[in-house]
Length: 310
View 1 (tube, rainbow, N blue to C red):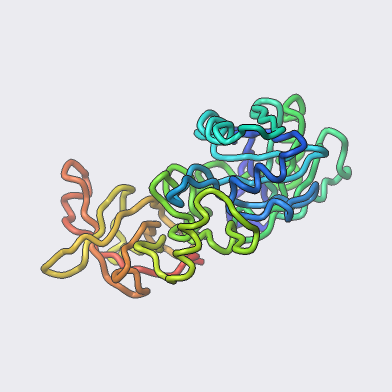
View 2 (tube, rainbow, N blue to C red):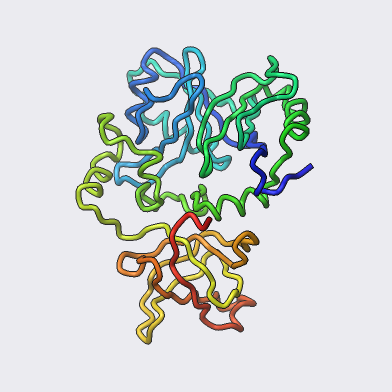
């Protein structure tokens, strides 16, 4: 059974996400030197959201981390399964740190409500961890992969499942950036509106910190993730260029994710808009690719709006 994303109580199957176990006596010091947030705020019952950066402050990964006994559990986008492990291991020199691939060992579910199982939490559910993956706080359920089907069945009965298409609409409506769309190796976390969620300015040194600190001091970014609405209700496309709605048609940014929002009755998009063009209410034209069916419409007028859309 699939439940519409408007539901107040719903669950998502995130088992495909890359998962890692970080252990060893130096695990806290090592990992805190790799991420933007303070790992000391993570616990057995609460996960921490953070970014892994390169020396230029650009993103290598977007992660969630929690404590499991004498180790940390990390999850990230599926496509980071190999590259994130390699990125972390590159900096393990004389540290007592072990990075173990655990993607296939655990199943991971997210509940958009406190999980009140009708039979009560049972051993196969493993751990229940509070975490904010969307606009509102939610709960992760980590369980042994062998119990995935049983957990999925019970969650379907208790909450209903949000399928991937409905989850994507919800994500875009809430302005949540996603790896491979809004989050890439060319993006700095502050540009993606991740500052409050993922950056601790008091925690101490980590790779990429100097760039992040300079941006905080300057108070400026070259671009910012924004919401966009198609003014003529013409569908937008990922990858469209945004230009100033003037004769000069100066390049102003690009679109990263699109959807039809039935809740507000409009064609909407997420995109990066350059400084000087990203004020709320600014009109921009979205330019369809030359071989696009939308090209018949010519430039599509859009307006920069605040995030989240709802």
